Amino acid sequence: MSDQLKQGAIFRHIPTQTRTVFHVEAVSKKYRMGEVEVLALRSIDLDLYESEFVVLLGPSGSGKSTLLNILGGLDIPSSGRVFFRERELTYANDAELTRFRRDCVGFIFQFYNLIPSLTAKENVALVTEIARHPMRPESALDLVGLRDRLNHFPSQMSGGEQQRVAIARAIAKRPEVLLCDEPTGALDYQTGKLVLEALAQVNRELGTTTAVITHNAGIAGMADRVITMRSGEITTVQHNEHKLAPSELEW
Image (cartoon, rainbow, N blue to C red; front, side, top):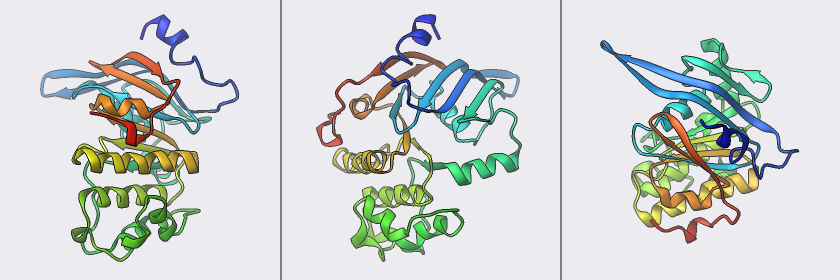
């Protein structure tokens, strides 16, 4: 990343009292595919802050999913350092990363991964039973607008409703961070906006730091910051002075 980006856009507009949640320092990630070495991330420097809503934007293969996986403790960097608050994750072992994911991070993916034989309430309860300080499944579903779907099975719900159950499941353990990988990728325009509204409401009401990765530039307008990636590097960082509501987005 250029010195201009390091000194300017990433840190500009962030209040000095805002706490850093993630600090990423010169992180690179290499994969080996047969005899070919693929550099997925190239010396990434990045901070994510408490309660902010960030969109990581870029085409397929830009490195955004790899970065999200490293932030969430699903992968480790080949070089560089990663901190969550005051805790360094770089050299954490599998057990430590498992505790970090369980206690601190909620994940939302493009596909909902609901258990078909369980109701919405029961799918959410799977998380609340192992969390330290969970919210009630009913409260989590109410927050995403699904209180009237508590006893419905996934087959009885639309794709957008199933994704909102997945969001409720992720937030029910009260994570400090919500990491979302293409959460609207399998949804149509109107349904996608309902899912984005649920994410915005969680960020607004619970103060959960939220990072959404997408190739859809139309989503960028609802973010506090938009981080654009290409070929494993951060190319631009934009701060939105005036955020749009999900209902105002166009794509």
